[in-house]
Amino acid sequence: MTRRSGLLLVLCAAVAFLQVQGAVKVGDKVDSFSLVDVRSGQEVSLSKLAGPKGVAVIFVATECPYSNAFNKVMATIAKDYKSRGIHVVGVNSNNTEPADSVKQHAEAKGLDFTVLKDNGSAVADKFGAQKTPEVYLLDKDMVVRYHGTIGNSKLPTTKAEQANADELRPALEAVLTGQPVPVQETKAFGCTIKR
Amino acid sequence: MRSIVTVLVLLVSTGPLLSGASLPTLSEDQVKGVVAQHRGKVVVLNFWATWCGPCREEFPDLVKLYNENKDRLVLVSVSMDEPEDKAQVVAYLKQQKAEFPAYLRAFKDFQKFVNAVDPEWGGGIPATVIFDRTGKRIYGHEGKMTYAELKKIVDAQK
Image (cartoon, rainbow over the protein chains, first blue to last red):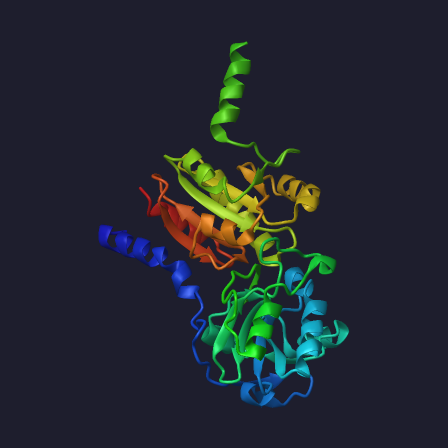
């Protein structure tokens, strides 16, 4: 290896985390996208799935124990906020988890919200999503108001009974009331998305 | 007596050994100290968990990387399993014959822990952060890495 190519390697390596950091930032307006709903098999757009006051896009997995610890929490959030105008949409971007297994998982685990299959991880790439579960909360104008963990930001857990939505709930309430989100960004612990 | 002293000195100078019954913990306040402790060698800091499939797939490559390059690098493994799951972490390290320094998470605040390790780390696992011989962070990656990818980075550090 030449000295120059070695230097180039080091420079490229030095920005590795930067290359995978989120392309979508808090404050960015997100364009709608269309993916297949694993239950209906029909392609649907995010703008159609969004509630009148916003939508929480959560990248999920079927096999990640950390994501699975939050299944009940996600279902509860979806139920609590649907009637208040914010919908939850799950996106599975793992190339190791085909649509039929995502459908079975959603039904078996009581994920009573729309789950989309992101073949090729295109939407994960567009958002810059890296792990599961990872949430992007968009307001009625499709502007990202919160990004990060659903809950347990200080002490991540794989124990479902300890999982909570202590970070997402205040953000949802702020979006509903038009107030500034108290903590706009957290680092989400979890399994990296298999691209 | 001299041999006992020698063993004690070795234990202190190399940090926690290793994948035995003891598994020291690592908090946000201790991360920088662990990296500094190994100054003079390339430090490969790897974050994983027993429940993480890609972490388990990556682990044998980490063992190989360490075993074949221990003269110039230190691999420091940090399990992100919960403290109550320590026994299964120890069992996995033994099963993998991991002979490098290994820790179990003991942070009070994951957000602070991530930032202490590398502010650019998004928080997912597996994750690897590499420091050069002077302790300067030179690389970070979220996701599984291969032996070849790791070796290439280590080889660039002369």
